[in-house]
Amino acid sequence: MPAPAPHPSAANLIASCGGRVTRTRIAVLEILQHSQRSLNHDDIAAALAADGLPHDRVTLYRTLDWLVEQGLAHRIIGPDRARRFKAGGETGSQHAHFHCDRCGHVLCLESIKTDERFELPAGYRPERAELVFHGTCPDCGRLRAAKT
Amino acid sequence: MPAPAPHPSAANLIASCGGRVTRTRIAVLEILQHSQRSLNHDDIAAALAADGLPHDRVTLYRTLDWLVEQGLAHRIIGPDRARRFKAGGETGSQHAHFHCDRCGHVLCLESIKTDERFELPAGYRPERAELVFHGTCPDCGRLRAAKT
DNA sequence: GAGATTAATGCAACATTGTAGCATTACGGC
DNA sequence: GCCGTAATGCTACAATGTTGCATTAATCTC
Ligand SMILES: [Mn+2]
Ligand SMILES: [Mn+2]
Ligand SMILES: [Zn+2]
Ligand SMILES: [Zn+2]
Image (cartoon, rainbow over all chains, first blue to last red; front, top):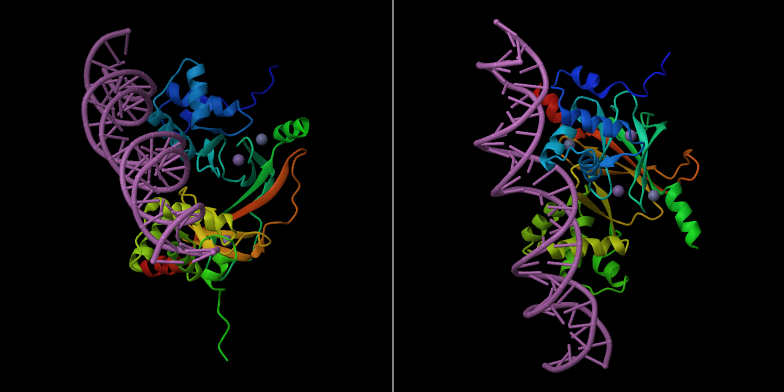
């Protein structure tokens, strides 16, 4: 009895969206699925190149936008005004994020939900909330401690 | 008996930071002080031009950066990856923001503080938290209702 | 599997937002 | 009013993302 796959097959997910199942989409989605941390465009382009599948910058932008539209990935805008991506949709799992200001990495904090109720001024209709913590991650904390 | 000024004089604030009190800094800070909503670079450049004080793009970037450094203004990064500015510092008043996804305007929610305690994974050291609500503002809500 | 259809890709050019270097201007101390 | 220096303007550049169009390849039909 084989252990269940940690993620549904990338190809199956893509097919179930009704889009074409292309090498690019499969490769990008698998890269996202295999990463614990969120990745920016450069990270993903480098991973593609390392897999022997170099791609045009524009194709990568369009592929990632498509994955987000389809709910197969979600996007976070970093304080460096660059987008970072992670596998999995956002619907039903609105969660907080942690940005390491030192190394730039972003972590999904699935345990902290952002759909609690807050009192907003009259007339303001919130549709979603974003909660982002800024600080140092364990790696960078260790490095800083070691240097001192 | 004159009513107290709604804000301390821009020139005085700038002088008390030890920097030079220039036309540019005064004009920019006053524009920020007189606006209820946060403003982006284009908004501010347009307001300067309307006051007969057109400026170079770069000067505006540097002036705004300086105001933020001095704690005379604070900055928010919008989902359109553009910065928006508002008069007043951030220290001691970490607050949430509301982004209208329809018109792009940003509102400071001074009443909602972001320094509450949350349970983060071991090793992650938060230094500040950002809480941003996305949705529609009263103006855009009215427009939408009227159109229907 | 071969051919037709058209979505996806690659390429070049452009847009937006922000930075860096250096010459010129103007603020503020005297 | 002069002078030294901080602030400004100008130019060129960097990073990130977008648009238009020709080419390629995924899927459909046979
Ligand atoms: Mn996430
Ligand atoms: Mn604010
Ligand atoms: Zn880190
Ligand atoms: Zn609005």
